[in-house]
Length: 435
Image (cartoon, rainbow, N blue to C red; front, side, top):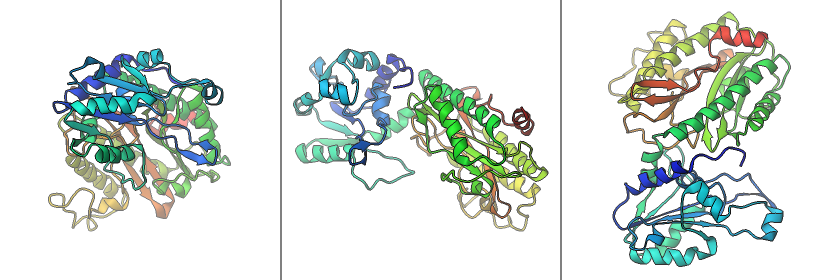
């Protein structure tokens, strides 16, 4: 791993928090992700199952965690199973965790090699009543492919049909939504690396460069600062491409007079940053570009101020929609006639509103171990939650798309903009590009 390991106590506390939510006499089991084949004899870069990492800090394939807090035998309360290395693995793949190293990272005292798993599984399930199993549950995506957790759930159903199965996902969604101090520090490091990459881009961009050259500059800055890499596929969208919300081709020439939308973020210790900035390719905003940019900035600032303890997802987005409507009216992109049928009381915020012509997406999402992190949209905002704030205005007929995005930590006394130091105002961006 490139990053500095997070403190062992983080993972010890995370397991304690999960234990407090389990039913009596329950076993909970977490698997690492599979290695995914890229071709006949190579794999994609490995990425750990985020729940497994959250509970152990172990960043290696072929790992399994069993927790049985109510076990009558203390040896079985927590067990971590790892791939046993050998001379061939060491030569071809490199170093794997030793038992001492795995304890130093995770704080799990009972560490076994993977070949012992089946025996230990039978011992703990023989005594237990409930089995919590983990699946890749997220309300933004449905998986149709088979994967390790799903295969393992089928195995438990087949081999232990009389046990009572429970979903661990709701518990993990509850826990992971609230970030502890070490997690916030990891996210701040991801933000700091992202900041460095953005300032590198400001010095590099000029008419005639290609989007992929800019992506390369970002990647270079990420890796030289110990980031794992990109938290998500970066969007480097010049001109009309900025109106394609998930544009990732990044293959066009950046032309004089165009705006460029940059949506990228570093991943550090598996925690994500998520930044969007829009800059003029030639370093100077036109009057129209500045007008639209400042309109989005106004929405951003007002929206950010509403990310507070006690707010709700739907009410927040409704208010953002109303703010966006007012800005679009001032910009003459919509008229009062267009808004006459807007129903803010009976129709959801994301349906049948005039503003949706120019802002098609939500303004915030959870951020953490995933860029679209897990968390409930039906839960009031709480201290420790981290959200993006990313309003935009997209005008395809003008080939102009503007989005501004920062990462916001909610606290008991307000919120903290984790990206407050990253240039945002028109004048600041122009001044840096002029250098």
